[in-house]
Image (cartoon, rainbow, N blue to C red):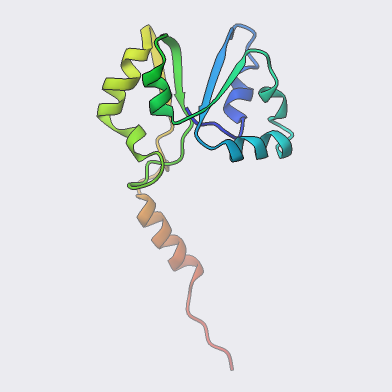
Length: 137
């Protein structure tokens, strides 16, 4: 799910044991831009083991019938109201992801900022550090 820039695909496809990788990203413009301009990831998009799907990740998982060894969520951060917020919910994991995993399958996702502060707090602290009042004579 996600990964339109190709980094996750590049890393997965380094392993010769990977038979097939399905990458589903919602933003075709991002994928096309990255294919053209991110040289480090470019080869991943042309690996014959990659099936690239442009669709909403939830809709694509619901549409497919096969089960997977691994599902990876390389998504935007789970900011409430953001484009991927509903892909970080318990109901999504239980009703959509779990049925698509084989018995020994695993689901991997990022967890947002690795720290004690929320996105709002990180932004507020950044503003405080960089937006100090100043005066000129």
